Image (cartoon, rainbow, N blue to C red; front, side, top):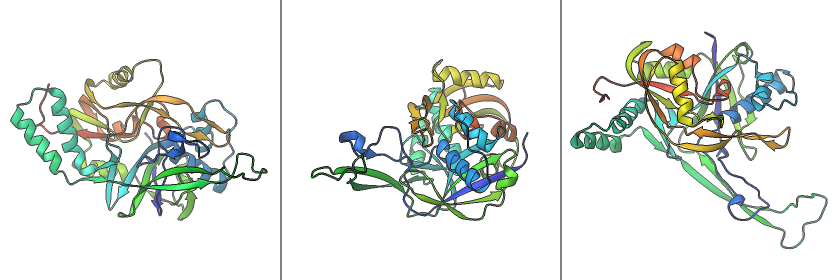
Length: 350
């Protein structure tokens, strides 16, 4: 188990574009002329920014033309790298995405959220008891709605920059930014591996982050900020738990096309010697991003949305489960990061 950990921090200083699924082309018309933003960057966006820093500031070698996009990252960041996140630190609270695109949930609120979802799944609840839980959920003050800022631009250049712009060759396009303006916002990852020593004392530095040349301030702090918060807020500062556990997906989990998503999940749970109880979640089609160096898109995967919850039963060690486990492909880069949430004894059982 890797003990050394560094928390990498991206401080947000302006509205950001974290490209969502779908094509964007300012030269096109219709749906392709609008760039949609998610409220959080993808793990590959964060890993790409970190790899760029390592190449330019730490003199790491440029990756070779490997056909495997994951391997290209590992050639720069190291084969032993393990990233958890990204997770948002907003207004002095750690926040994770919900399945509704504009909602964030605080780490504090996840136990209640997961218990509500589990009790719905069980379907052995008296109507009045379920109503009580639903009322409590509506009163929950630990969720935050994030503002989206849509801006319209005019593209005057043609694809061939040497040709003059003719009359009528103007292209309107919309870009949707996520705006944390009402809150002090930082985006965090935890990083483990041999790269930790080189990244443990990054002085604040502006870096390009996300789309449209947006800027954030990169810095680092030693220690496992996310894990410490999970242990304090959800595990009452203990390392072990038994019974029903919710695995709350904080980042997308991406999967190969060889089998159904639930089959991948069941296989993951069985390999951990846990009992699979069920899933509350939604699937999607998700691209891994765009390779600037190769000028082409990375592969498209079946994916499980952030905010999805897997319910399992067994004996659990928090540190071992959190550090050594993740779901799906590209887990070294932060995909498939989940937050383990032990459910209380009052939760309904199967």
